[in-house]
Image (cartoon, rainbow, N blue to C red; front, top):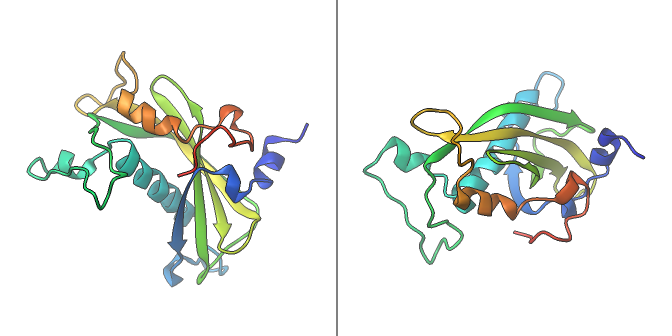
Length: 184
């Protein structure tokens, strides 16, 4: 049986359900002319939080400024009408590097959920160079959803609207088969 790292190295774009494109910047390169390690954390944060905002009811903008409101519109039907009263706190992260990328590469990011618990979720992000099928990096992190006011998990766990959105990304067993999941 192949190791977990060997399985990650075999990932394909089609193993991921939600996708986003990222254009690298000159500033992203480190002194060795490849993307600095910290940039990967930013990429993971960007695709995960874009999904949470657009599909799971996370709304950091109105939470920090209660005078603003957002509602679904015909121009943005993917936006969720559900608004979460919880926040996701990162409790662990990981990143496995297989090949480097650098400016001016255009990257295709793929997102899926590999573990979905009562109040936690573990995401996996695949990083691909546009036009190439070999995965360059596989990483992600685990969120625990907590009440905004207390920053503690609730006995009810993750809110239903958040869970519903995350279930759309869930890949059973974390393997390469996404045939049971809807592509977004």
